Amino acid sequence: MASPSIVWFRDDLRLTDNPALRAALDRDEPIVALYLLDEESDGVRAIGGAARWWLHGSLASLGERLEERGGRLVLRRGRASEVVPAVVDEVDAGAVFWNRRYGGVEREIDAGLKEKLRGDGVTVTSFAANLLYEPWTVRTQADKPYGVYSPFARAVQKLPAPRPPMPEARKVPGFDGHVDGDDLGDWELLPTKPDWAGGLRDTWEPGEPAGKARLKEFLDEDLGDYAKYRDEFAGGATSNLSPRLRWGELSPYQVWHDTIEHRGSGEHAKSASGFLSELVWREFAWHVTYHSPDIATVNWRRNFDAFPWPRLNRAHLETWQQGKTGVAVVDAGMRQLWRTGVMHNRVRMVTASFLIKNLLIDWRHGEQWFWDCLVDADAASNPFNWQWVAGSGADAAPYFRVFNPDTQRKKFDPHDEYVREWAPEYLGEDPPEPMVDLGETRRRALDAYAEVRHGI
Image (cartoon, rainbow, N blue to C red; front, side, top):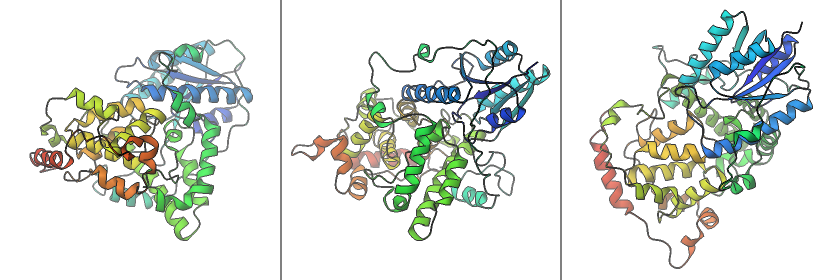
C-alpha cells in the first residue's frame, strides 16, 4: 500500500530548487503538498496586511502549478503542532519533508514536530533551502556569531560556493485518497472593507513564474546599471526581488548562480558584485536573528535600553504614517509604501531616520508599521534594518548619523522624479512646511544619544 509523503510548504512557495519537494519526488510515493497558516501557536508573529495579500496570490499560483503537474495544494489552518500530525494520520504518511526556518519560535515548533513524528515511526527530514549558509556555519575565530557585516562577508567569501539550484519539478504525483483542505478564499487574506490593495495589484503579480520573469528581466536589462543607479530613488536599477525571496518564490541559490552567470566584466562585474553583497546582507540579517530571535522587540545592544524615549506622540506617528510630515522625500516614501507595498531601500533608511531621530519615536513603532505595509516584510530584515538605523542593532549606523532628507533628495533625486511621482505638491509654488525643524531635532537627537553613546 502507498505510503504518501507530505511536503510542508512554508516560506518556499516554489517548485524549482525546493529540496523538500525533491526529496519527496525521489521517495517515489504519492505527495500531499501542505500549506499551513499558523496564527495560533504561541509566539508566532501574525503577518501584516500587505503580506497577507501577497500570500493569497502566491498560494493561488502554487496551487495552479501543482495541479498542472498532477498534484494538489492542501490548505489547513491552526497550530502546527496539532495540524501536521493530524494530516499525517489522515493520509497515513510515511515521511514528512520541509525546508528549514530560522526564527526562534519556528525552530521550536519544528523540533517538537520532528521528535513527535519520528517517535511515531515517521521519517522526517528538513533541508537548507532559503539561506545560502546555515546560521551556525559562519563563526568568528573565537567560535562566536558575527556582529559586524564586513568580517561576516569576508568569512562567507572563504566558504565553499553555494550549491547549484535544483531543477523544477515537472510532475508531482498526487495523493488519490481523501484529505480535507480549506478554500483559499475562506481565509480572507484579501482586503475587502475597504479594498485598499489596488496599488498592490497594479504593481505586483505574486507567484513563482512572475518571480522568474523578473529575475531574468533584471539580469538581462538592469544589472549593468545597478552599481551606478541603485541609490537613485526613481531609478529602475533595483531588482524588486525582495518579496520573491521573502516568500521563497525564488531561492537565494537561483539568484546567486544566475547572477554569477551574468556577471561579465568591467562595470557589469562591479554591479554584479554589489548586487550579490545585498544577498550577503540578507544572510547577515538572518544569522543575527537566529542568535537573537527577539530582535523585533528587544534592542540588540542592550545598553540602548537606557535611551530616553519621550512619551509617544501619537499625532506625530500618524502624520509620519500618512506621509504628511512636510518633508518631501519622507512623504514620498511613505506614500509609495502605502500604495505599492515597497519602498526604495535608501528611502527606507531616510524615513526610518526621520521617525527615530527627528521625531524621537521608538524604532519599534516604525518597524511594526513597515511590517504591516510591506509585501516583503521579512522577520529578520525588517527589524534588523530598523535597529541598524536606530543605532541599537548589529553593525549599526553610527549614533551621530542622522539622514538629512533634503540632502538625500538633492543627491539621489536631483531631478525630483521620485518626488514628482509620489508627492507632487512639493514642486508647487507653496510647498508644505516641515512638521519639525530638521536642524533643531537633529541636535535634540544627538543630545539624547549622548546619554547612552558609550557602547553603542
